[in-house]
Every structure is written in C-alpha cells, then in structure tokens.
Length: 191
Image 1 (cartoon, helix red, strand yellow):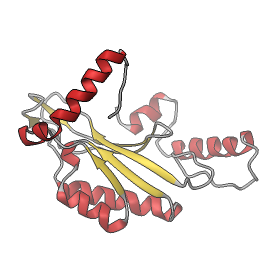
Image 2: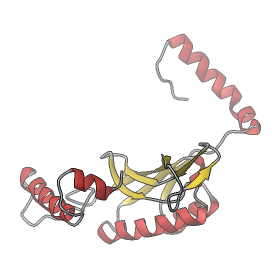
Image 3: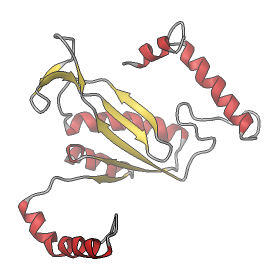
C-alpha cells in the first residue's frame, strides 16, 4: 500500500495532512525529551541533532500486481508481474528513510546511483558531517554504485555472491569456525 493510502486509512483527509501530523509529533518529541524549544527534528528520521554516523540499509521487495498496471513488469525470478520498490532504512532507528516505487526489474547500477545521489544530497543538506555507511545485497554492489559512494565519501558493505574460487579461498577458515562452533555448542561464532 502506498503512503497516500496509509494516510487515508489513518484518517487524514488528504496526503498533505501528513506533514502537519509529522510536524506536531516532532514538536511533541522535543518537549518529551526536554530539548530547547525550536530544536529541529529532521523530518521522518527523528534525530534531534545530527548523528556522528548512520548506516542505511538498501533493499527491494516484490510487490505483486494483478493485470497490466503501469510500471509493472514480468519478473522471471518471482514468476509474476510486479513492482520492485527500493526501500532505504536507518538501521539504528529501524525507520524508513526512502521508498521508491519502480518497475519490477532489478535496478541497474546507474539507476541506483541516481537514487542515492538525490538521497545523499538531501541528507547532507541537514547533516553535512555525518558519516554515512550504505549496506545492501549483491545486486546493489555495481561499479556505478561503488564509484558513487567512493566519490562522495560514503562507506559501503555489499554482499557479493559466492563462487567456487571464493569458496576454496575461505574453506580452511570456514571449516575451523564450523568445528569450533560445534564443539563449543555456540549459537554464534565469529572468525
């Protein structure tokens, strides 16, 4: 469901009422925390002051559609017609930062870099010195995205798909960790 639909369900007469609701809740947050009157809370992120660092998690989710809605595409991975919106979350606060409705295909590196450029520009307007780390699945680890991150000083962690060469390179260490975890009966063991 889109934001406008959620706003209507919540009782807003139109989507513009959501801005009023956000402003009023930001003001209540300032009072509740005992912050000086007039303290700005960055809209939708809820930080009263810029954080030293923030980690943003980028991912997409499948939204199945019925019929031939505009922007919907057939996605062979899901074997369905769908949208594939991109979600960006602040990992520390577990809050959404951005949601972009887009066609049901894996985004190209150029497309992701363009979305990130706009998002980072907006964040930097409010938080010019906050260190940003971006993390995501392997299909976000495209050269265009990594180049963009390096050029604007953003740290990044992307899961890269495994392969036989990589598996052979880490097999001894991985086997050692598996063995120690089993012997210690540890739920988690880091190498």
